[in-house]
Image (cartoon, rainbow, N blue to C red; front, top):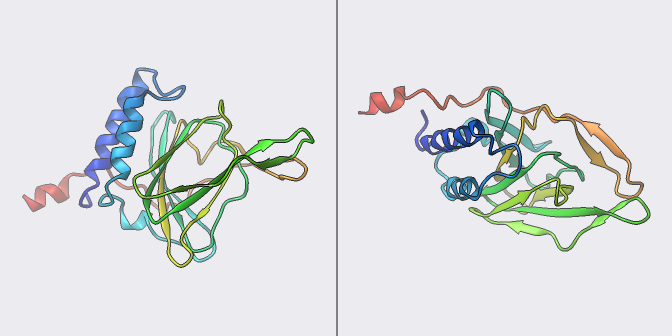
Length: 201
């Protein structure tokens, strides 16, 4: 295993135990949020292959997906100037900043049927977490807060986000266009291989 990735493995184990108890179907208990905040407060575990920016598009690397698709963990790598369209998630989520900075602007439906910005954008710094919930409104736009450098955030969702049908919104007309994001990953990190730690002993 790469140095530090044991932090991610331990978090996956904790999340799986909660999922087995049926506690991730809705918003998870506070203990998981605390553990996720602890995970993103350390920047020593993300594999290099899941931290690579692309000059044209932000990257969405799958770190782990529960075999029953009850949750997933993803790294988002933002190149300078990269952003998402206005979109939703349809499941609960945590967005944790690992490296750099990220801006998030939430949107709400207007009386005329379109969408408008709700409040001011939120800037996430390393170690900070934003919580998303369809119940409270999960429509937002995200962009890299760094003008000249890549930024990396770690996201956790209550499902397999790369396979869920979600929506991009036209803020003027309110029209919702369905999409499935997929993943940028070429391979998923092997959290269960401890050979590197055995060789180092």
